[in-house]
Image (tube, rainbow, N blue to C red):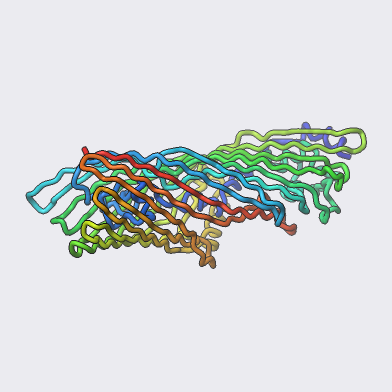
Length: 493
């Protein structure tokens, strides 16, 4: 029956574009919303709790009033080495481990400062530069023998559709290669796995992601009577994300008659940019105590997804192995995304010339994020899907609090730093925190400075390669260890 089906599929198969929008889901919102500015090594060394101190370029992405704390113009550059180690298991199988390393730029910036002994404004500064908000570099692999097949997903998505209505990214490829077929021409598609849902066979997948979310920030600030620091900043984030997934199934033990192996590869790139506004103030209560606050508007991102898939299916019905492959068209979809707004309060205790202790407390409302799928589309189905996903965002996410605490000990020209971050979980009903530990050292001179910062965190993630209604999920448990080493070289100018 497969041979008959394949002979007619050549002229019945058509490219379907109706499912392109499914690439944007509620879970994808976190990729561009769960941000943690990295910036300079000094900021990293104290756990990112830089907002209430001033005098550091990273503060432009936290509390822009901090730029008012500069007394001299300054240039700095901060390369970063990131090493992310992921340990993965599929449904309790053997653990696999992959390491992804990436060298890049955490920060580069310049601040121009003008000081005056006259008038109320003691210093006025303008800064322009780049702060890294997120990095997407990760690699993981898993493999294990489990029940079910991704072909069941393709057959389910094809139900009640004629062959020429099947999308060209999943079900259409499965039909073209013989993985699904319609024996009775009733739009109920059969597979080689029907009736054998309890059998187990090998699954594996290699997932690689890369990219960044970097913010070009332009800020202005001033020091009013050496009592109040006021500042504002325009943020222009640039997003680049790339994902490559290589999924495979094989039946080396001949558990499933006819089926031999399959490969399903997915490729996705997301690129775009946006803008936001940050306003803040810091009040010096006395020589030792500072308190501050800042508000971040949502970032509106204009994004473009480009994606494609490829599918290979091999089977043997007694006359030798038959292998068929098919590739999707190059898909593209443009859309908008508004990330959550954020409110920040800051505090710092300056211990004379011996150092300081500082803290930042942030509130982020992840439930306020919204998609806009009608940017370049008037299709009713796009608007309906937009409403569905935005409703899901409100349901599964919540507002959460992030706490950052750090300190610095000064000994002549040397600085010793440590910090901790407790980042609240964004999901409704999740009261756990991601902890980030950091440390750093620095050397300060009259004309130049050199800082070193290190941070480590570990996160447990759950990954589902695909879903089939009514069938057990393929559950991949990932333990991700994230390590970053930042070096900042700066000059007073």
